[in-house]
Image (cartoon, rainbow, N blue to C red; front, side, top):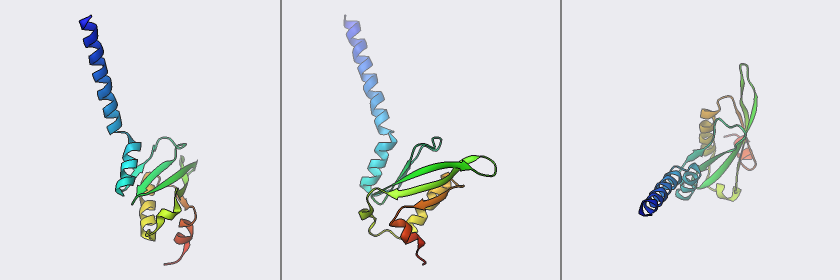
Length: 128
């Protein structure tokens, strides 16, 4: 009986340790932490085109939808549509901030054309 109790306690400790590690390395938790801290974080599953990606920048959450298409040599992500969850949070953002986001997105998807949802689209179309 004592052996069984020790085995159950050991199993519970191993399970709790496993859950702690899973919590620490959870990308969604890292995204939430970056949003709260106002840091940059790019959350994406590059191998899964059907999953949207999320970007945290200066406390604002951007979401991007990927579309698969053909290039000269292969099937790649050729179009990306990016929007912000709450446009009111964009106060203080400049074209340079959005160019930085475009550069970061193009690092993972070099063949993609990036489209922005309003009001970002209007800002990006204005001449400098």
